Length: 152
Image (cartoon, rainbow, N blue to C red):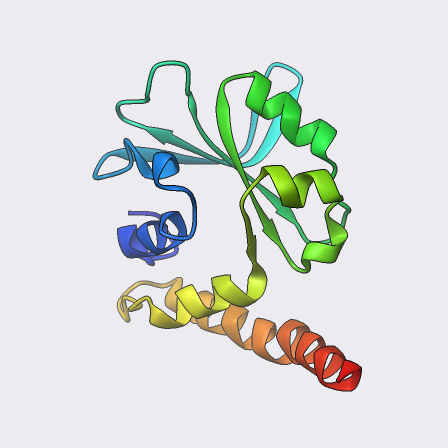
């Protein structure tokens, strides 16, 4: 289990929002690496299944919060043999090709997943996860909701 204490239920919930082929190999044993380098590539999040499919090394999740997402970067990861998905604060920060070719999970959905994931009260990271969800609620998602409201 990862130090954050969310456990495998968090990963299962994320994988349920991706194409079914992305979840193959992540049933029980997998490794999560962050800021991982493979050649000239640096992955924000890399999930390595215990038994990868032929021709697929794992799942790269590109986290786009402060920068714009370009398909060129993600296409390169795919050419290296990885499935690719994107966490995005707002899908508008991704170019059209990214939105068309790769599954995108918005932060709003991540917040829903975290809310539905039971936290281990005895884990020291529970406080940080709670603080992070409050940050999403008050700083990020509230502004997004206000923006949507003003557009109607």
